[in-house]
Length: 393
Image 1 (tube, one colour):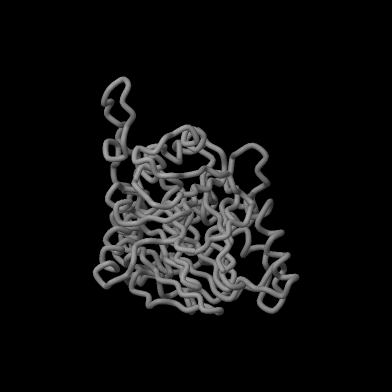
Image 2 (image 1 turned 90 degrees about the vertical axis):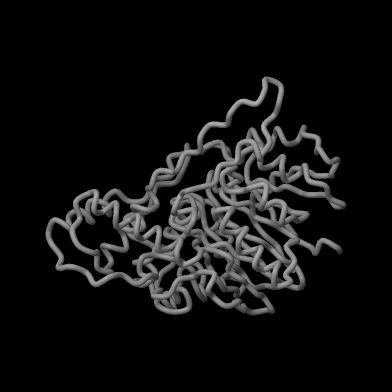
């Protein structure tokens, strides 16, 4: 049995999974997302004697990690959790990768890191958002250590990457990590150190709470890479994904945890904000080993951005259920070209596309006719449990 709740996380991601009564939280949107929607659901689970078997912070972006920071900072200490017990948390941070030996510290270096820390994580500025927690100046890495969580199967010194063996959770749940690779995490770390150099930092930063905070806050505040505008094809000609796709270059997105969850023959593909090229490479390796690339549910990468879903990726994978999390207010996600490419492919089954919010692209899709004649339907399903069944059942 697999049920998924997709929260209205504005332009972010937040998913609660019930797989044979094993409970997993993947991202938690902003702090306001957690406080408004998720906290009450977790409290109810706790009252029923349940725990969260796994929490996954896919990557360091405020619209994914902010709610988890709020969660951890308000959940209390081991043995007396205020909301719910958490068995393990996955989170790749600076502490999860080895650093070169640090140079002697200096007042100037610490002052620079402190100024980044004071900036805090980017705030949820949407109308009606709840106040930002006082812990928004603390990294998730610092909080996981402070509040005594099992972090990446230990103390957080190891990272969650494609090198991780398949993980088994209670009730016959299996998880395979298909992203990121270690080089993607190292690229993000190298970019951060280069940014510190640009700001005047000398030496290699030592691993400590202040450095953890500065690393995550700076990475979460990194400006998104901007794709070139699509070249007009003709006045009355709609763009196809192949016409406008430009690969993502955001290093934070490239560090995103992507995974396959399996339960009772049901296979769910959660892509976070991962790069299409990295996912494609890993899936092709799986196919060479005899794995099927047909899933029962696919969470579309990066809120349906045309920079994160390529035609090649969609030529490899398919599912009767798709999840798209975005309200359309940031960067125009989801992009209609991605949605059209999903439903335009031939299929002998109906594709159901579930959106966390209505958006211009999702409303446009309702009047779209598949180029292949394939059947599809559009649903807005924030806060509803979505039951996932095997494709052939």
